[in-house]
Length: 351
Ligand code: PMP
Image 1 (cartoon, rainbow, N blue to C red):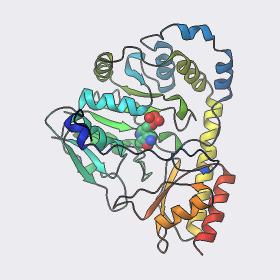
Image 2: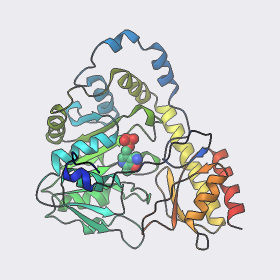
Image 3: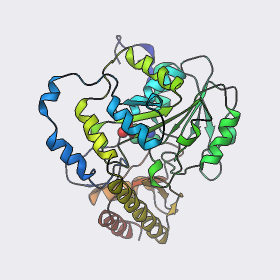
Image 4: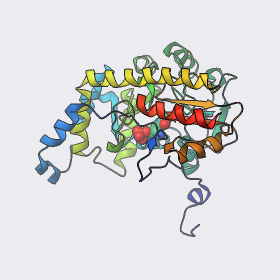
């Protein structure tokens, strides 16, 4: 605690990211992709003219935004980019949610949202999940100061279909509705096609999961040009140079390789279904997942002890020490071999 910190920072419980171990472990704790980025990314890295690093990048990140606009079937004015979707989310909180009316979000959801509320002095209204651990779309109210949720949700992994979210958007017209699609490529349904109908819908996405580029720090937002302009205003106030030019070149190379993208996500989905089946055979309850992770609990075995047992066997998963999630482990989907090792370890631990 420091006297120099502003009150919001003093009260802040910082977001604690999953461990990045130094030793070689089977790493199933931060929802990274187990497969390498598209081959074109490596080629772009080799061919990148190093002299370009002497120059500031394009302040508009135009080439990358054009590539994203093509990918999502929108105009370039409807695309914003940032250093990871966490940065894009922070800017969205500042641009759209900093006012008197409370921001509504599910309880449970991505744990960064409450951190941003604290930091920016935004009042938060938490909406319990329904009895099947799904975001309760009916609970959002028309008089809020905004709505935010991840779809599929994290760490519960359930995703609502587009039509259900369209129903919510028909009710919520006076505030920004932010749908965080960090995990949508693993079987979820994107709401980007709804943007034309709903100027208050902002969708965020990331290159960290389905594009295997978490180390690059690249995220984006898609919405009406009105919302994108709001984000640009906030960003311009403290950082006028968006994405670094090397990251832009690599991200564009990734977007150009549709085949690799589809193959990797299909592999993750197939491995997920296999893992769900095998966890079920071991007695785990596994919440239905449309993401690259599953949330699972065992009726007879303590999750914290399972976490430790796995760690001792060189496998890292995520255990959240909160009341609602204490019984669960969140397990990222790795390669088939990695998931086989996980199942073997559980066979020993759950005997
Ligand atoms: N949204 C959700 C729901 C997430 O789980 C994450 C990753 N932890 C992010 C956004 C942020 O991803 P990134 O900053 O790597 O784009």
